[in-house]
Image 1 (spheres, helix red, strand yellow):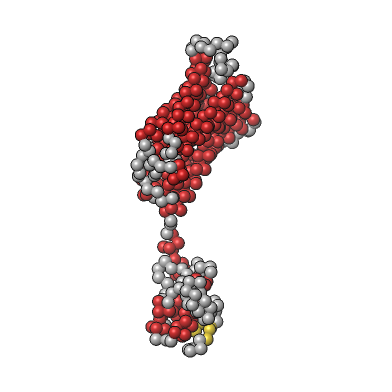
Image 2 (spheres, helix red, strand yellow; image 1 turned 60 degrees about the vertical axis):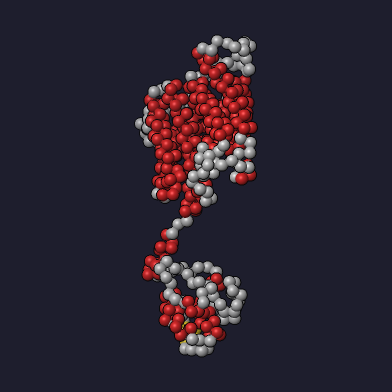
Length: 417
């Protein structure tokens, strides 16, 4: 019905050439339609909304009725881009007409805050996954001895894209993934900070993540330029996990915003906060000790388990042996703390499940650590050990986010989440 005419039984032929003329007809004849009979009004409405006169509509069930009453027929207001009839099925597009497109722009540009928060939460969630993969890839670079495969930084052998062999490929892939994560974080952070409501929720975490990212970039360069010094390798690992934890906190708070949860709410009960703090402290110490064991090549200082060097249970805690045993003993304490924290937060919404997951990951991590020593630190087991460590950090980070004042940190049943 884009062209031609349609004849009304009670009047002259009605031109139906374009969307604009149809709306013009509705506007100029609104007054005369008020005076028509019931049947005539239904027919006029059917002409405007393209509904058959005797066809029941989905909204009213009456014959020939569209959602807009005949007396309300009018030209589209600024921002409208469709007829009000539910019988049309597909909204009318007005992109072909510049004037009508201009009128529809405000409505088209209107954005749903919940949808924006949901999309940003998914973006930061994907960034968390990529950063976790980067942490594991960094462990594999160390395990393969490829940390100095590119002896300069930021280029590799003075080239942007060097010739790739096995070791150079590992190190170069690590750098490319790290650069991609930095760019993606910058774009997502800018998108989140443009919204005042989201800025209030995640602005502090984004600032912390940006600072950690800047430090991490510097540490990445120093790790190469300082020839894999123990302090740079360890700091690189610790800061990378802290950055990933901040990203998860941002993603969880954006997810709460998408679900309409308030930005400020009571914290978790005191016992839950204490449990979360203890778990976070022991985990941070364990990550630090793990980085030192890896960077000083002390993983095989005690090639036995549970004893060390010829069945000695309490050898001298000095040098590589002391560092290895410190990592081992703190692992025992960490598992005990995680199990206790999971028991202490039983029944606390979201914090309890997060700590139970952390406890399960801690037990699995300890078992993989034992296997790593007993098998002679194979690359595959080392990669699994690093992956479980990254997941454990994320589980405790979720407990921190929910326990210390995210959008819903109140006590309640686990099912409340």
